[in-house]
Image (tube, rainbow over all chains, first blue to last red; front, side, top):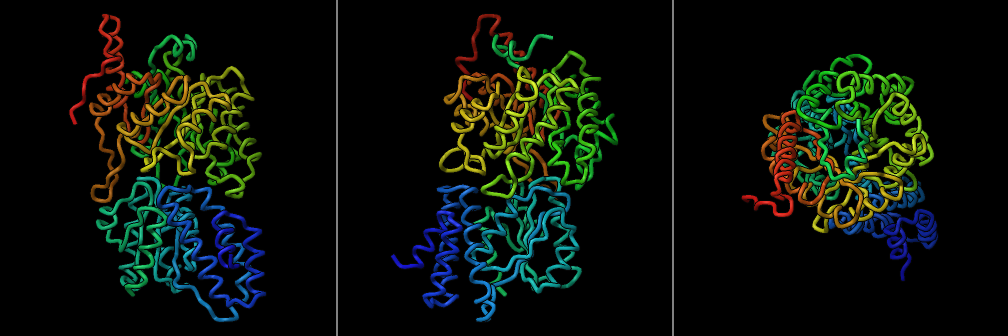
Length: 212
Length: 313
């Protein structure tokens, strides 16, 4: 079994120590950082995402795989900076005003990072203007918002309005998700996309970035 | 007042109250505000809500302490007021219901993910629950409802905390399940079978599910629980899943619809029926009426429970 296949398997099994070790070994063997990242780490997170989507595995498995992914990324980071490898896109992420549920949002962040995005996580209880300011400041092309309480869903609409007021609609795309959120709701408030679950949120963000 | 578990053992069906959160939001709780801060600022609202549910026929009225564990309150910087917050909630419900209903200390998740998946030490979660339970028990709750759990380890720690503080205190423990093509699982991957055995092992007296589903899924969940446990079962359904109308979330299941479907819960031998998000005192009243109606028919020798009439699709 090749070292990158071993690396992938270790990541899927959530073995962070082994992922760090194998990443170092792969670097020592002279495999380019980009190849280790794409084939070894991101490829494995794609598999984890697909299995999660198919309900073959659950959140704990994804959390452990993500921890392993970060362990590998830590080894790769200096090389990636050196080689000038940038992320495939920047996403500002947060739970909307007054919402302290963040499992869903964290999961989306984990999967986005796993797919090679740079994620700016604003945390919980993020005011509408903060999403937009942060996206403009970081040059992010996507804002992702999560709500788990129905009562906080209207705050999502205010972020859409904020993007329109700042006249960055089109440059900054908006994706919404969370248990009470639906495709219809996303359309109703003028968001660009709806993520049914974390795995499909990643797919939608990819296509939003592709639209630019 | 007769002891709660005794009544369940004798086969009595108890009605638990409905939603707290959506009732508080309807009374001016601001989004972003800690729901339990009401206990400090406006306990009169808690009395009003308890009164509405009591009059609707609830046998069990819950305290507004879902997020009143020190760990959870810390997310709002209110951990130092944990005792006051829990005390005030219990007293408000007791003032209204006296001994006409059981005062149930409500307790939800810490909001943290436990190691090894997250960063929170299970010991810290257990300590946090112990501290909340000491206050709830001292304040005189009749039982404790551990609710909306998705992680079995955390749910077990909460149940254990109640029993360690007060071994004879009745505990109901409910988890929130998602419907997947492979059956019902919590977001952390806990099946109903695992939930039933794990919660029982931790010492829960009543097990079941709350939140996350409307009454139709809850009937399926109750059916699965029935196959996995001999313990009494509690079901607290949402009034459906929220739909948005003009940006405002609306829960669609009417009291009549919910009560009608809840007949099937009784046929499955569910012991406590209550409501969760979106339910109102009208839902509680409809469930009360249905339960009393069936009990009446049973007394008259017509056992509808073993032959539920087919429901129109």
